[in-house]
Structures are given as structure tokens and as C-alpha cells.
Image (cartoon, rainbow, N blue to C red):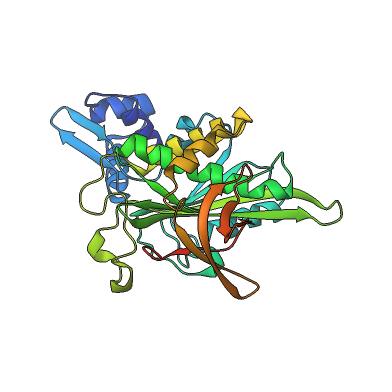
Length: 318
């Protein structure tokens, strides 16, 4: 553990001011080393209050692997990166390197963020949550959509609880706030070809956390937003990350489908006319339900079609 990390740990475990002299004595360091560590922490973004009696840690929105690990109830490996080309690719590399899941990769910035169908999405350093988790599933390939549905419920519930908002879900993997998208979720299967079985699942997501509304490109102003687009965040990214994964693992362990009722309640697609394509041919019908495996059920003139993947559009929102 570095000097900076030791000082941070001491400050976090004390609610009152801690003098530089006390820190130096307890850590067996010089006062100069303590002062330098404080400056390094502040440069990294940590909020530290200065007083004549010493230093006091204030809640800071700096991604912190130790804080996240301490808060998540499920044992897992956590990596926090300053930048990543793609956290999903980082998770893929972990598989190729023979690392054991579960592994959570979180980045402060994603250099080439991509969503569904390899589409780019807008990212801003220190204003979003870009993360992917590598799991070893106890499920079959046809049940993979359930992971995305379950993940969407965990994210929506975590945000609603901590931020006091009311999110909505657009099938299959987008979360909206006030009619605008601010979360996208991807799930990817890695197969054992010889055994023809599902070997790993990677779930990735991008959350627009505190991007100011005016920072979004003109073409996204009416379609995208962030959780705290018009004011100071009332929670930290670490707190939200912890809440999301605790809820996810709790839902995963329940082995029931209760989360589907939440998903259905939060869906703003059900009951509306949707358009989708199959084999390059467009279809329009009414979304009438979500199956127990996460498929969207669409009524096409009396015939029910189940969509397990792909994209839908609504006339009122794209």
C-alpha cells in the first residue's frame, strides 16, 4: 500500500480532524511525507478539509477500488482504470489470461465507447460510470437475455433508491429519465465451442452520471441526459456502483422471476405500437408483454411474435 493510500485509509476511518503529527506517528512517516500525500490525494480529486487541528476526509467522487470492494457483499476482483478503450474488451482479456471470475472493471473514461450494434456513445471523463463484469453463469444460452433484464432492474432500482427519481426501461437494455436515455446495457456470451455450452457472460454498461445537459452534442440534446444533468450530484459514483452490484447479486441469488414484474412495471414500451425489423423486413405491432425469458411479445394482427434481440422504435421516442 502506498503512502497516499495509507493516509487516505486513516482519514476515512476518522470522522473528526486528524493532525499531521498524529498521522506521521501512526504511519511512522515524516510530516513532510504526510503533507505530500495529502497534496497527491487532492490532485487526484479527493476532497480533504484543512483545519488548524488537522485534516478531515469529505465524501469525494473519485472511483475507489477499495471503497467499492468494501461495499459490495459478493467477493469479486475489482479493477479501477483511469481510461479504457472498452471495459468489455478488458473483461474479455481477463478470460484469455485465464483469470477467474467474477471480475469487475470500472473506468473513469472510455476512449472509444460503443453501445449496441457497435454504435458510439457520448462519454465525459469523471462524469460517467463505464463498467463491465465477467461472470461464470449457471444458465443456458437461451436464458442469456434474462441477465440483461435482471441487470436493467438492478440498475433502475439502485438509481431510484439513491437518487430519488423514477426511471423507466425501454426493452431490452436502455434506461430512461424524463423521456431521455441515460443508461445503456450490453450482455455478451462467450461459448465453449467443443462442449457447445455457455462458458462466460460479460455485462457492460455506460451510465451518464453527472454530464451537464449543455455538454451533450446538439444531435443528442433531445434524446440523451444524465442522472445529474442540471445540478450537483447528491450521491457519489462509488455509492451507486456498490448499490447496483449488491442488488444484482441479490436478484441473481433469489432464483425466481420476481424481478420481471418490476421490469414490466417500469417498461414504457408495453401497450404501445413498436416497429422492428426481421430479415431486413419492417414490422409494426403492439407490444403486449414480456416473457419469462425476457422476450418482447408483439401482437402482429392477432399473431404473437417473440423478440429475443434486436432493436425496436416507437413513434414517440427513438
